Amino acid sequence: MSLLELTSVTAGYGHFTALWDVALRVERGEAVAVVGPNGAGKTTLLRVISGILPVRAGTLTFDGAALAGRPAHEVVAHGIAHVPEGRRLFPALSVAENLKMGAYLPAARAHYRESLERVWALFPVLAERKAQRAGSLSGGEQQMLAIGRALMSRPRLILLDEPSMGLAPVMVLRLFELIRRIRAEGYTILVVEQNVRQVLKLVDRAYLLEVGRIKMEGRAAELAEQDFVRKAYVGL
Amino acid sequence: MIDPIFLAEAALNGIMLGGILALLALGLNLIFGVIDIVWIAYVDLVMLCMYLVYYLVQVYGWPVWLGALASIALGALLGIGVHLLIITPILGSAPINQLLATGGLLFFLQSFATFLWTTDHKSVRMSLPSFEVGGIFVPLTRLIPFAISIVALIGLYLFLTRTFVGTAIRAVSQDREAMSLMGANPQRIYIVTSAVGGLMAGLAGALLIFQYSVHPFFGGQFGPLTFMICVLGGLGNMVGAFVASFIMSEIISLAGVIWSTEMGYVIAFVVFIVMIFARPGGILARRS
Image 1 (spheres, rainbow over the protein chains, first blue to last red):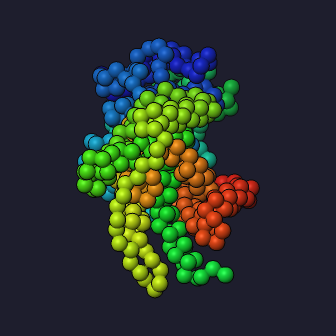
Image 2 (image 1 turned 120 degrees about the horizontal axis):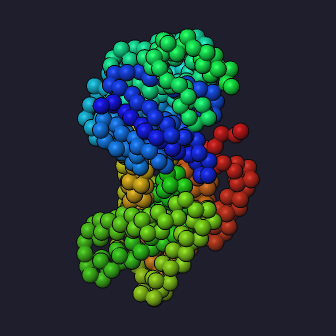
């Protein structure tokens, strides 16, 4: 059984349907990417998985538990941490307080110290700035904090929404290196990215999403050879 | 010319009044900052708590501290009740509806209190000594409530900065959705916030009844002032509300000695209006 499995998922906002009949799975320990042009529904897909947006039709199971219809705060308790688009830090809270909020759930709170040590080790720059307001960090540091905050909940699946967005090219490379390290620690990752070439080097498998439908899926190495990569780049 | 001793005494009284005003303003501001709704009837909840202390202490002879604890408990319960019964159903509706609903509660509570307890002023008499420092008389009936207010405000500060739930309350006020991604149920955070806000109303009621008499329209005396302090400090800005409480209480107290109490309120409102034009975001807001 897959860790995460979506079958025939349809979802949207009001009268607008953003996802049609989506099928997707993520195995334990796997890193999977969803790529596609702007407005394809990539962010919507992650919002549906983390429970911010309700599933209209279809099933969503995580480790055997049916999550469709569960609110976001219950989904986190099952072990899914969502690093949302735009990072969504608490800007007036300090770096340390943001991380503390990542460990809000009782199960995570019990391991608070230990998780914190791991995040400090992974992102030493955050330890240096722990008393600083999150809003005053640079873009790259903010993204590290957003990922660190997600790790604090001790998740079994991490959803990353456009981690490279708004970052300088040098920072993008460093960030992908950090995500690779997180992968190596055994975390399961589902990542949505515009930076297709980079992300395909990082993951095992990838899905191509276009206008709300899965158009293609396959091993990352194979897909990188196909012309859909070019298509996704150009944004047809 | 007014004797400087009188002025010093008025300034001291202003500080002591400021402590209680800060309690009211921070309670109201906390709820606004997190839930984004102004409880127009906030001070009317204080009024109910004052009646409770009056009956328990003055009529039934309970010890003062027990009456105060009961008042705090009633305040917290009222806070939760207001949130569940009045705020929850209208959370997603237009601001004007939210204003009308909490405004409606105000009229309901005033009429309800008039019906139950008539419009008579009721007060708890307590005689505590005053002491003199350098010619200034400091009445313990004001000093003790002030000290308790400050202790409570420090407690609030520690709660909001040191505990998981308190930090979550601040986080929700910044990004509700992101906090639900951390696993916090927003409704539960709202209930805790309303309970804390109500608890502060209860404490304020227990402190006010020893200085002011309570009547059904007590809310009209302190309600607009509390709201004004919150706006002056910047709605949702806790530090701003704290500073604004003392500015307002000093104006009222000093002008009260120099001219008259009525004039004190007139000047306070004039300062408020001028400040709203000069700094619409509150005294501590950064200029954009």
